[in-house]
Length: 204
Image (tube, rainbow, N blue to C red):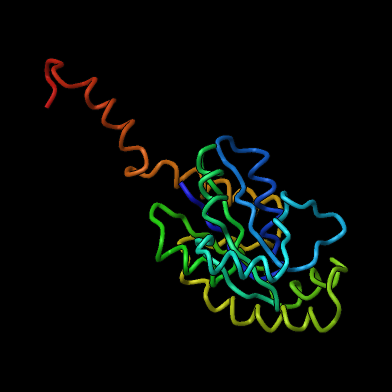
């Protein structure tokens, strides 16, 4: 299965995903490619695959991305190779923007879409400033984008309001667990159980 987590920059997507990755088995993070500069604490190949704009555009031309978009002035995208690698290890969780989520919706099946929201705009502004990774112009651009992105929340199956981190992480875990219990997802297991009942006296 594929889980897509989207939401405005600064809403806490990465933190929430990190929590569920620690606590749920058979789940792998799909590492996106980006042209944005690497932040001090980030490790190439773990947070993102950091590439040049030239390299990213070459990958676009070669059809290597299953989704990509230009967000906050930089390219972001999910490579087909990354999806294949992550999928081989079990379920996949993606941290992507609204544009990317829309592309995934039209190109892949069996995807669960989750939107993460901040409780209010002022809290999102506070979190962006607290990160100390963007200058005022970048923060203003991200807040302007957030106003547009928030309006897209109803396109998603689930919404998590990240006001209290522990509660929000619990909700995201519950969503993933519920999605894994859908009848169509467990069809093979269900068939095996039903077959074990066939032929028993009184079975209808």
